[in-house]
Image 1 (cartoon, rainbow over the protein chains, first blue to last red):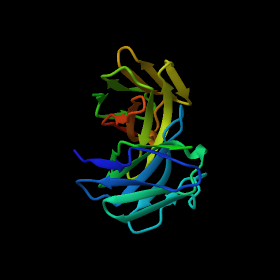
Image 2 (cartoon, one colour):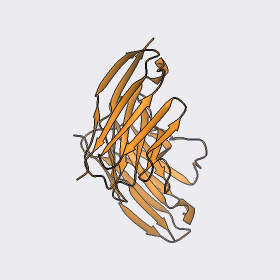
Image 3 (cartoon, rainbow over the protein chains, first blue to last red):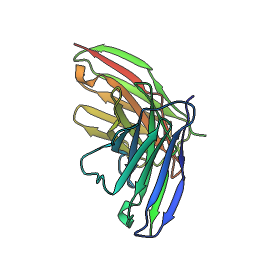
Image 4 (tube, one colour):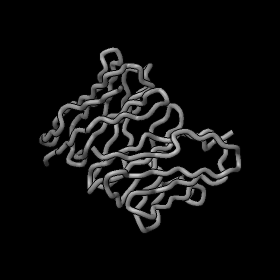
Length: 114
Length: 111
């Protein structure tokens, strides 16, 4: 089946630094990718929809200047958490849409901001 | 290795019917289980989250149960409506490892 990878799987950083997370569809082209995050004991929540070659669409309450999304190719989307703070510590997961309906998920990235 | 299955793969019902979607997982050592709704071309919408210590959660016409020991969860939808037509996914959180999603159940509610 289709495979989506994320890198890194774990990241620990100091407060104030920026962290970039990559999401790749390995064997298919994805015009649309999604970014989610999950805080402990909470549901997985959609952050933004990333469309190749255009600006991402952010969900209400998600700061677009803090969470920069770039979808420059049909197989790669990146999420950059700028000036990360401890409250940004979370589990970030991406998914890629194969065609119109089938969505494949990456394994996720756990971010810990000290 | 955790595996998640969902039955049925597809379901078509007339409007107004109550229905049950099933989810099974092989490793009972889960942190939580979530049910999601997926509309074509859209991101997932979280419906219900059940922590491993809980047995059920309710939201409106939706009720989800969890039997961790038997590796099963059910999503009950009461008085189904055409707007409920979507794909329903269950996913288990494997204690800090990763999410494992089921293949989904495609629901069609006919007016």
